[in-house]
Length: 91
Image (tube, rainbow, N blue to C red):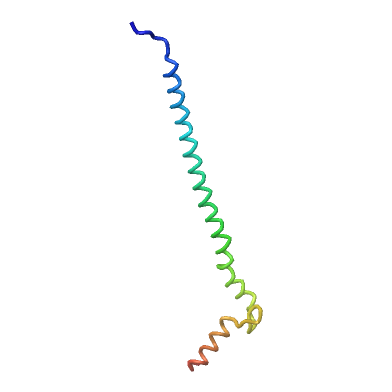
């Protein structure tokens, strides 16, 4: 007859399997959170860097309304267009 007492080696193997499964789950979660953190940083930096570039044109146009010159003495778009038309002789 076979002895039905639990084998201590088998119990250790089952515990080791359980620990390795839990470790695998934890590593997958860490990896997923790392990807989420990376892409979140990419999106945030894209917004931080691109938003001013998208807003600078309308802001400069608003500041230069009614004057012939734009901010810092640079010519506005309308002045440049008039100069181009005069240069090409289309006026």
